Amino acid sequence: MKMTDTQLEIIRNQLKELTSKDCFYKEKLKGYNIDIHSQEEFEQLPFTWKGDLREAYPLGLQAVPDEKIVRIHSSSGTTGTPVIIPYTQKDVDDWAEMFKRCYEVAGLTNLDRIQITPGYGLWTAGIGFQIGAERLGAMAIPMGPGNTDKQLRMMIDLKSTVLCATSSYALLLAEEIEKRGIGDQICLKKGIIGSERWGEKMRKRIAQELGVRLYDIYGLTEVYGPGIGISCDYECGMHMWDDYIYFEIVNPKTGEVVPDGEMGELVITTLRKEGAPLIRYRTHDLTRVIPGECPCGSPYPRIDTILGRTDDMVKVKGVNIFPSQIEEMLAGVHGASSEYQFMIDHLNGRDICTLFVEAEPDANRYTLEIDVQNNFKNKIGISVIVKPVDIGELPRSEKKSTRVFDNRY
Ligand code: ZN
Image (tube, rainbow, N blue to C red):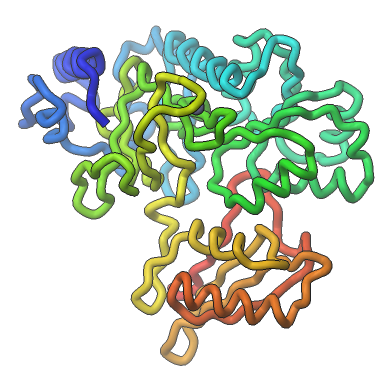
């Protein structure tokens, strides 16, 4: 990706401003050349890591005076100290504007009724979907997660046209609708699915059972929240709002920027954020730039659907395994559903891998077991024990699902 002159100018000014006052980046960029004149010079600047953000807990990232901060959000932080991100009113407005743009790409209008199932609270999910809906002028139905009975009742009685959910919760609702035989009472047309990487097979099931067109929405709490990019009707990657963020794809090991089209880690620099601007933030999300123009004609550049996280990768018997590889492999196996759990245990001095996979009701369990075993060996490169289970036996979650369990340590 080529940095545009406008982006360079904004980043240049931002660097000057940030290093001229007492704040996180004054310390962080001490000793670096911040008077940049090119993309190459920008790429000499250090990365910002999640660990840096944790160290700044609670409000060390705040880059403006207290009276300008109107809200904080916090990343879920499964381990250790959470990260707190302060927002100014302008940050909140910008986020709403970007989210509105996402809804528009998905073809939503002020006549839509948007059922929002991600959680409200410290994390950015629910409230982001909400402010975007309000900015668009649509009707927000702020359900939050859980209570499937109530979700379905509201969905029917209020004639919700749009479902916002994680992929696994959308799947749970889709299965429940099928089970109850209430599909003809559902008015959904679109699904906006966020915050989780998901396979093609799962996407097809959700789309089919809900009878909707699905859009992937991208974002992370450290950079506003969901809504900084979304897929369009052509389903060929997510358009990213590069007037609000500048992004790079780097080799996760060396930190070198990789050529367009090559897979690497997404790194984000905010262009307009006031409360907690970020320079070269390592998202840990693995993706690639999709080169060329999108058939939809949008001028916004695209990244691929998130292929995994650098920290989701597990190494077994010398082979690096990403959850996305397992999903891709299962997609090619007849009788396997999209749902699986991968367990790694250490027994008697060696690593033992077990793959639990939900079998389609009409699948032959024995053939499925052999097929998955062979495919795993051929496509991913290691031998695993395969255990087919019934549809619905593996957990569905309202938040991010964990599918890989490394029990070796
Ligand atoms: Zn497009």
